[in-house]
Length: 498
Image 1: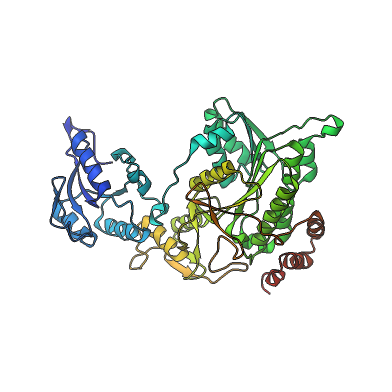
Image 2 (image 1 turned 30 degrees about the vertical axis):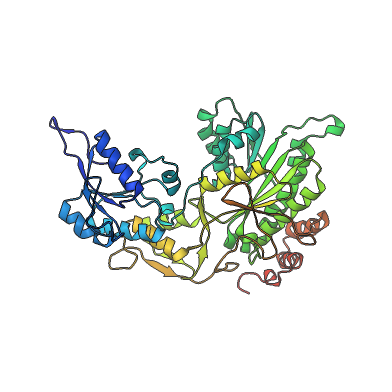
């Protein structure tokens, strides 16, 4: 973390460290540094608790509050700042990062609050500040033993395995030791890449790459075989995690046929495949945009949920379920890498509205919670992940500017932020559940659940047949009307520019 090594045979002096936060985390790390002789030297604390200012803690003075960082850092000759404030919100972290940048000092962050609670805090865990830290989210404690009891020795298939969520599901499933991990996707390059990544660490698990498009019913039927004719299935997964989908709201507004064929038709094809091969658990990865949908993408994901609930009612064996959550930080095509690319190019960050908010979590967190919900395995259940408080997109843009060394308030030559206005199908705010859905606690503190409501979200194959025919014909106008009529959402009938 600090300056180590030898220079002309002489050992360098330890890095002078200013510790922000004199609580349990800060004290634990300072004591470890002092005890183990690590190559850093804590000099002083900062803490916003007025009762601590002026006190001596772990032999160090508490020199002031966080607003005093610039002055205190200069007074003590600090060379680095340790942010030991695991319970703080994202705004405080962002303000401290700005101060560190102004002071020209490197900075690191201690582990999250869960690690503090469990007494598992060590200096080696101190890490660079990431965008998720500035959002104030916590990491998931994964109950891997329970998950392994369901996965170990079983055949698991992940659709969309070359995508961000699908790929992360594969990474988290592999250590649970399935007998087979089937990576299904329509893009050969993305499947090749995830396969190459996983192969060196697969252990005894057999990796099975399958290039297939979920909307191709005939392809899935061939993979399922035909038991009545003595044709054995080519694939017979015990568990299916269905992540394949079109997810970009503006693109699906312009291409509703694709959204219907992949998100709805593909899900229906997969539910039939699952029942044909005797899959035990089937999980649909859904989105908060499926709640009271205002976009084509959201509407087709809501229909996908309806397909899965209908399959759950019809199936005597397969446990069909849904996991619904909001946006994922860092996923391919998500706002974070998009903003980072803009910053690197020196271009302003487009924010559609200053009031827009979204729910966010990390890719790893989302994947682990999907697996936790799969383990619960409630037939027909919808599991809704705890996303914390909605995050301002404007604040997120400011966070990324800060991490890139720019002051979002202006005054430098940074890219800045531009307000562009809402795009077709976008909402200012998303919700994670419908008003009529009754949420209940589950066995995991970060997962809520709801059961199907009688008389709602009804689905049958005739509904899909009508939509598929319109999509294949390219009859966009009537396809939009079909979406609006099926979901009783008149606004869906209006296309971009109307």
